[in-house]
Length: 400
Image 1 (cartoon, rainbow, N blue to C red):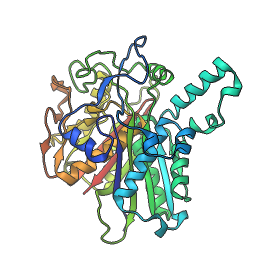
Image 2: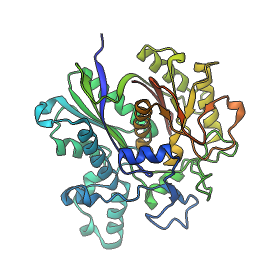
Image 3: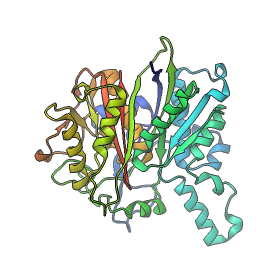
């Protein structure tokens, strides 16, 4: 019998709520955090909307030494990790340091920190580049800083699979827990809302250039026109559950990942295979899934591909599908992690949050979309789906 791996604590930093419960209240109320970019002047860019985390001041929450050495993305990861540990009631002193692990996901690393240092280099010379540039931009910076801050010296990792990273980090943490670790801090954040970061995101052609914040990111809609970028994410404490450990939000029941073939190949995409394997890993049938948290890219072809995968698996069993990320934008490595947090809160409270903005769903997609308002329902299982730019697919099954 496999060990049960339970999520015992959650920490969230999101565009529509800087704490877990604030985020959850806003999400159930359909309150969006998407608006005009304010972190810099976006007037010369085609995409001018984003899900910014407002009201988050790192220097009020972290020591100045850490905020000086690290990027905004790591600040949010550290705070989310602190809150996940506090939520779980973990006493780190009671756990062997080599039996605690950290796994985080990042899509872009510390782009804002890096841009500031490169501006200093080209504008003032090499003497104006700080020593911390060498580590603050790096994908593993959040994992390293969280590990150091909490004395977690077990095997650690950083995952870079774009939007799928939040789920892949959970999969990697599960391997470590099954190999002897007793506690994992796992999740993902991203924060690339700076000129350099936005230019990099524009290169994939997926960003919405719509000026109306309420209609800029409308997945599965007749007028879907791309997605809005965002920042933030979530962290969790995951533990091996041997007895009656409380509080437990839910269990990591199944996980799988696949990689799509290159576009020039004629092989089909592999999202359906990832979902099927995650269900098999969890020992569940499709009709035992109570809700799907969709990847919801907001591009017509990508939305149809996801709908086709879901319909192929669930068939006539119309499982409710939702995309609460329409209230935050796509948070890249933080997006799937935030979806996991949302799914766990949904199972806790017996309610499915809505997809906002989508008012004219594509009927031919055949999805039972939760639109407009939350839907109350007893939830014992949830499927979270994520896709990353470049062909990454991941699926995670959670049980209550």
